[in-house]
Length: 462
Image 1 (tube, rainbow, N blue to C red):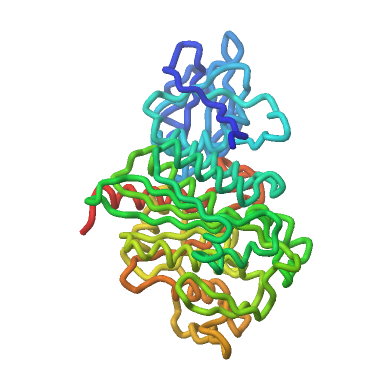
Image 2 (tube, rainbow, N blue to C red; image 1 turned 30 degrees about the vertical axis):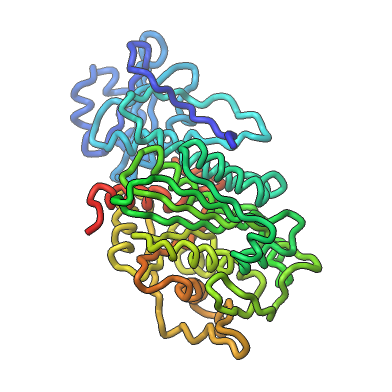
């Protein structure tokens, strides 16, 4: 999909480019000393103090001479994301260097310029920001975020399991990765729990796998993504209000593909092994029922405690398959539980891991990229809540508490202890427009994960 646009230009600064001066409150007085008297008086009269998100246009002989952008004391760089929409669009603008990270600023500008316009023409008027050619890294990351957002924002009638698998295959082809697709009998035999989730839909389920990189000396990173293109809840049907955003239930797959795209485009020193489970959880005579007992790829028999807890069944088969290759890191992404949102809200994905080293790497990556994660425990004391009297385990807990932890504990049963694994339970959505984060699909944890993988590639195996 290519429904988005970036309202920035890759050209060198020219005299016709109007400067933008990003300023913090502590820098304003020194800046005023460089201005002539009337300009300094004008800035003061506007009440500009360097406060966050405040823009002041400075008049000049030919109209506008420059713009001031208040950064406040926030160091996340999200404020830069307002520029494309807030500045006049009839000219080109360029950032003046200052006390900020230029790459993160450029990335915020690009993230803020995103629009999903596949079905509605783009509203004109986005300002053109001139960005130096050194922005290559920010452009790669922005493109990965854009494509993940496009997938999440696509309506479910347009993006079904086959289309999601196609998007992953097209990405893999661009980077000459080795591709495998499983459907029909091959899917039923090899990934029976995943297949059961999609059995109620008229749209055929698929599992896509691709591998990138041949150097066996490099770390192997396995990525798994939950790709439920629409989730009715199955026979345990969701109320209408809870179903409104279920087109985003494939957000985990979109994020996994976005991470893979960034890793491959940056040519990081790792190998990739990527799997996305592409299904639709619908209701029909073929759909799984509450208290059905399903076989998994691992051979474990699981009792379906709730048909709306379907994502963990998709991931169970993917994780079993991925773990068999003994990757250095195994990371899955999923819009898995509402309980994680109750605990952490919409902006902070929950992180679970059986490895302190992997968890700390992801947390550090999130801090560096202003892409936060928060680690929750794989608390073994709750593991017995998944006990079943007729199967190896139930898909849901026996108590209405700690839902995100219990879901992670279910997944933990499908990962050997000697494989370093992390599970990221994400919302994958912005509920409202904010600087650099427009309302709609969001690739939460993408930047954190890419940062962690890049550092592992630089260090290599310990």
